[in-house]
Image 1 (cartoon, helix red, strand yellow):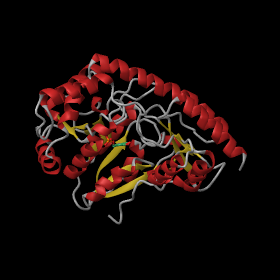
Image 2 (spheres, helix red, strand yellow):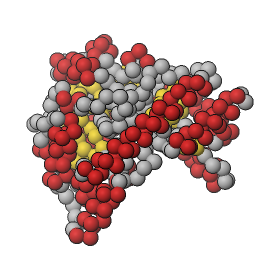
Image 3 (cartoon, helix red, strand yellow):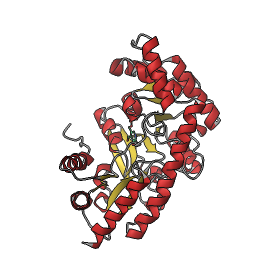
Length: 380
Ligand SMILES: Cc1ncc(COP(=O)(O)O)c(C=O)c1O
């Protein structure tokens, strides 16, 4: 545990709560979850299920009806054939990541990941006595790994690669041709590929095709947390290559018994036409927020060389304002009442020079946040 770091953003989170308790009104751009809650049809389905069904353990891999619904979702939305037999329902993407790393990592195995990245991913590998080689990435590769970077960093210890598209904290994506090249390069070396697609559906430029379009021999992590606005329900899934389900099931049984049964009933309703209509409206709203916030931040002097195409984050350079993103974030919170996340939560690659803005609040709040940041910067 000495090597596992806590979420630094909790310091901001706690300070924001303290200031609110003192009566201050805080603009919250630090939170990595939709401000929307589960769509009404999902809640109704859950209430109905609680009234009509006894809530017991389910199969470790999840209810067959939900696994089939996820399989249909891949077919209807992404034109992909992903049979329910290759889908394990999990406790969020976190559960899926834990199962994937638990099944794949042996002591001493190394995984390649980009830096910056979602921090838990490297910690999961560490939990299972593996190690992570964090590869610094920047604007020139859209803050993502490329085939070239993977080939240059591959060693005999390397067991595989874990990437996320769209990414947290950058909101950037891996282009389909690059994703295919990455998968081919890793498979050519006998390695495994894990793709975290938790922000799938929350894309604003092109329709996001899953990495599963390129190979059915990869592990793909997904979740109901982000596009489906169901963070607290703790529900996700893992797509598993043919032939690996037995290990996944054994791990899941031992670690979790099963994912939450009420959440699974709710999850089935998350794919209905009625729910999709609500979720697509929300996606349009996230896009409007990004299109408002991005030019405003650029105008204020934050450096954002790559336009984020997905998720709900903007990863912004603060080199014109500060060399210490932790201090900058705390000062911005204390003096201006705007909460953002310092870069050090996402790695060591120049993280002092970056902060993450989450547009998980209304446009009105974003406008107020921008106004406050402008005054804060003018007074420095
Ligand atoms: C890239 C990424 N992966 C996984 C997770 C875990 O999400 P959950 O367990 O809620 O599905 C998060 C949460 O923010 C994330 O940003």
